[in-house]
Amino acid sequence: MPSPFLYSTNPWIKFNIYQLYRGQRHWVWCSDFFDSRNYYLHVGAGHMPPSSNPAEIYENLKASTLDRPDFHCPTIVRVQLSLKDRALEWVADGSLTMTDAQDIAYQLDHAAITDWRPLLYVIHRASVETRLTEVPPDKRANPISKEWTVPDLAPDEFDVLGF
View 1 (cartoon, rainbow, N blue to C red):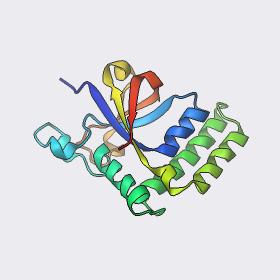
View 2 (tube, rainbow, N blue to C red):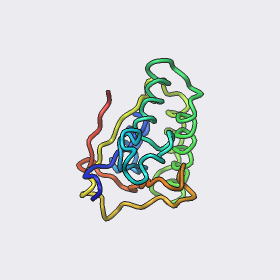
View 3 (cartoon, rainbow, N blue to C red):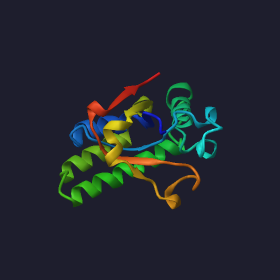
View 4 (cartoon, helix red, strand yellow):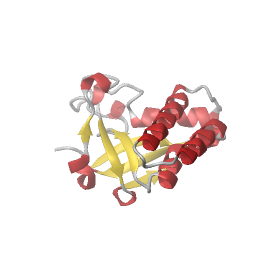
């Protein structure tokens, strides 16, 4: 039986962009486990690499934003580029203006390091089950691990924690 919760770690700036520009609907990559290092007996959990494990992503972002600021953190760089690409996709599909895309790019380029601090999303699985998409093996950090995406996570389907 799957866990009643899914977990995702994202920078605060990504959360804020989706709140402001996407009608509070969030696209997230998530896992059945908060910290797969503690679930080594569960099938697939022990194979979750650090780049897909919400706890390790959280630890990495916290260290890079709150403990020892590091704008070269690979997670920050990856998310920054991904959000800029997404903004252009949204312009192309007509769901965002070019002006808003430029605003997003400016925010990403000029954000304070603390704007990249981590947030943990605790997602109520039952509310998103029908919209969960399994990440194809070639897109996972480890083909054995299970990873999911939710394209339109609504505010009442998850809780956000920062610690």
